[in-house]
Length: 255
Image 1 (cartoon, rainbow, N blue to C red):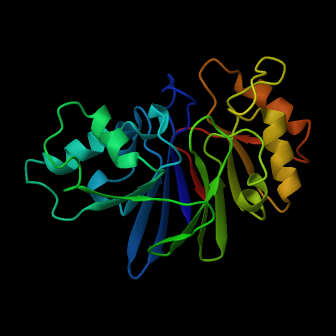
Image 2: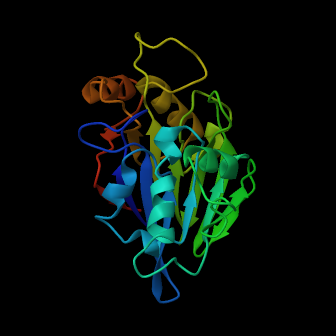
């Protein structure tokens, strides 16, 4: 399994990275399967450095804040208004309840029928796995002001865990347990951000991974441009027994 950080900036696109988007790929059946976790603000442009949007097999959304889903509007345009004509197949899009309506509202003036001709939108449920080609994708409801999910992605015995946006919650344990690679929210800074129920800080991200057990690589992500990443890393390393990594746009992990 290959995991490419398309975008990892928190809450809005930053000067070095778009907002949340992660491309997960694996070989099966003689071809490459490509699933996108989130498609936040600015991410569609960066995605095209890694593959044609036409070649996506599915998009899975953690939640419906714009920094995680707004570029689906642009993806719709690439599929619907191609000079060669609309793509003939619908792209599966999995997300929280209300995903279809939210996308239609974001795309002002959308034609009758919404995005149904291009997107096959379905609703995820807590701990109910999805099968997408070689991937088993399990959503876990997490702690954010809106309905939100982290995703555990498994293929060929490898495990990726992506928390999406969350504060500390019980579901982080089954989500992160035994993950080969854990991409964990770190939008908050200890001592600065005190509002509960929104995001993890570095120390709370590391504590969740330690509690889950068996996490091999801890990568902090969703860092807003106003954060000092090294401060976040240091706060995580005060808890994590090893080196903590920082997500970087364009980086590919082999899991």
